[in-house]
Length: 381
Image: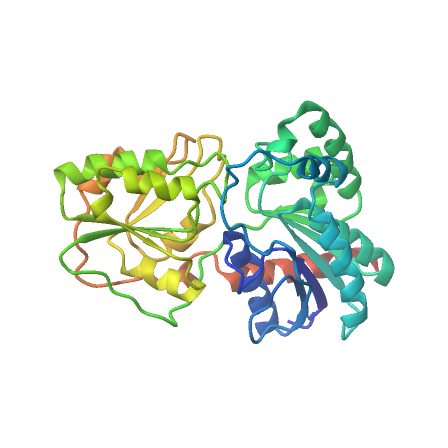
């Protein structure tokens, strides 16, 4: 490892703020630093031990779904701020970061969502003369999470913006093939794009235990607050059906729920078998996953690939129950429907977690990124 670039990384989602999208950039930063790189992070918040600068955000975390009609100001914000309202934070973050950087960067990494974060990559690569890597965790215009992008006019003009953005990165990575296909369709040279999948997280700093007289199913994270098309109701219906045949089941919902989702839990006929928890730290979330007898993943029917939490789940060795009609659920349900899967769960006698290093790890991801950066440097010098 002779090549150890100086890197500045822009992330809208980063610990200690609670978001599924915070894990990927955080553990990449840690792995890059372990390999000898200097990494300076620009984010709305930073945990202890991470070098960088905090640029506060007016809405650091989504607190609940909106049940009121949008105001005229909301309409203007969505239609005047492109590619999304977070562009205001991105521009402010660039101004702050330029003055705070302790080194001249060799690379700038921008990791989305939101897609406006990539504006910082273009800005920094031009200002410092450095290379730029754009990381995509979600699709941009294919099955977009932002409802505004489903509007034909909005989609038309935003496609122009996306193509303009993607003319400039030296590298782009996506978590799966479908995202890579969209990035190349939007104008990136195929030789500059690669897959960098989600990876297992090796953090055993906390422990947890559930009641010994129940078979405990755990869901970590949000539903509609992560994907507006993801609904909690199908999961509650499946669980209620399973409880009728297996009364010792207990469902633990760990993470932020909206007001309508909490109401759905209260109205569920199996509500006495359900516990809701406030958002917890990443380390505690992982510990609760390891202590479960079953792990629940719920996705919208348009979710083309499993969410990143499935890779955390897989590292525990605990059975996974997938509730979706997206087409990938069979690989986790092993030929059973979700009700059968829940009924078949058994109380684990002990927690045995496979070594996450046996699969794709943060270190492997960091090594892949450094190798790609080195290749670009060799080709352009």
